[in-house]
Image (tube, rainbow, N blue to C red):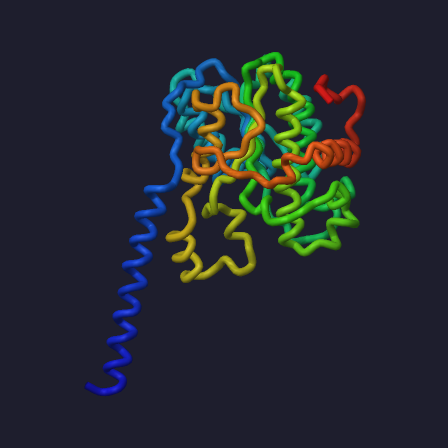
Length: 333
């Protein structure tokens, strides 16, 4: 047997081992991916999902509509929003209704306009899924003078939630859900990082992690302030999911990367399971201030338990979004 034949055989065996390992991992991954087992119906309830035009948000909205809820799709892109509206209406069961709202979290004016429309047209709001977010590599400030990723991933959702929280209190028991990421545990933050000038000094990955940590810290603090109101607040890690956000990364293109993500990443429906679980499951009724992954409680950053930090992040967020006295809900302090 020649040298090249031996090399070819070794390469072939190695490739076969890689394929077998990949298949074994995929089987294990599927078996360990958390799925929402609850079949609870949501008839008569109203749910709002931000970023519902694609990916995790779209799958979440479709499932809530399947369970009979009235679903409000809050989307930035009107064309994709219309496409999502059709898809969710197709998925909806008898009694469910679906409406499209315009929401651009990169514009505080848009956030306020969206909230105003909800307050003017809806009698109740039982579920709010703050799903919209992304990876924004530009550093140009938004129209509000804020760092894009900080505004879209944290400040916009913070403002929207505060503007709608009184309606949710009237609709209690109700649920607020913040979609974050495991990456929130890999950074330390102080409230000044939310400011444009300070965010620009961070590495790009740090900005993303800070924005997601701020979301988790805010969720836990809001849960504390809403104690005994009937409104629960929880956050979650959806898992690494094949969404438009993931594919927007500069290195995420080509057949090899697509093969990798098909093996090691969740589908959007799988990524939506924990959001659906927190929105619908009886198991989390009355549970607030927790963080979940794969439909079970997970460990959040120790900074989420820092009450002094939480109050400072809250105050800084109020200042950055320009929260007015007439917009401020009645909450514990």
